[in-house]
Length: 251
Ligand SMILES: Nc1ncnc2c1ncn2[C@@H]1O[C@H](COP(=O)(O)OP(=O)(O)OP(=O)(O)O)[C@@H](O)[C@H]1O
Image 1: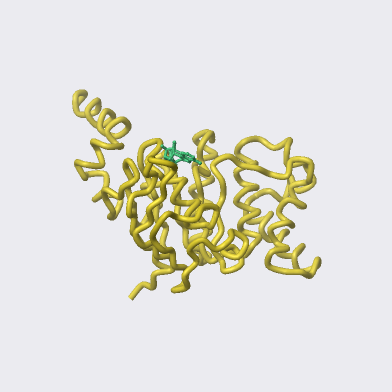
Image 2: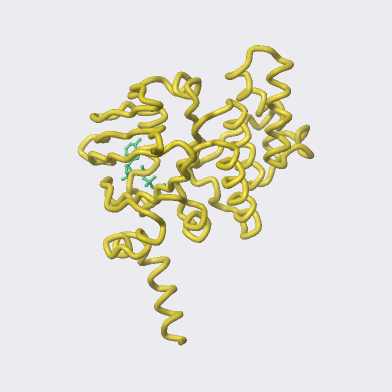
């Protein structure tokens, strides 16, 4: 049986009177690609922040490999093998691409030689090798997103949480990002992905979890979720329903 790598149990997070996450529970098994979707303001990033230690949830627990990580600091959670990227990428823009990735590698290794070896492997894997000497601030959006992923990979994670890593990318860049996700997953990394580009994540996800107004409203295989009436009404409607209706009208 698949082993739960991440277990989120009844997470509630409030900002004043606003309940951003309302008793959310789910788990991610080792080796899975799970996507977390939902309308703007549904609470996806807040949940990422609660899981990765950037927020201490109001109530509920988070377990990674069976260990309680609720409220532990982000660097400690990263040391355990769970890391995340940010929706708004923040590379150290006056440092080179390679040095940016090195900062991640130093979490795993205190030896410079070893950290450089990890860094160079990750630069090859993420197709950033040719740009390793460029200043991070001069990269395109797509390459900045790639660098964010590279920095995370250099920490040698067991599981990566990607927060809108495909936002702002063009079609071919999205395809490359999808391929990278599949490649990382095949190399043994479990993925939890927040994304609005349904066309990109549905084909690569094993399971999808849907949040709406802070609550989990559905969970299942991509085909199950896209046919779920509540999900269509709360979220997919705008994107999927109109598109399929247009198509049906034309037939
Ligand atoms: N630091 C904060 N202080 C106060 N309210 C916040 C804070 N962060 C998020 N919120 C509110 O919590 C709710 C959930 O926001 P969150 O960013 O988690 O949603 P999201 O699903 O990630 O949205 P999006 O898809 O637009 O990124 C929103 O109403 C938002 O305004």
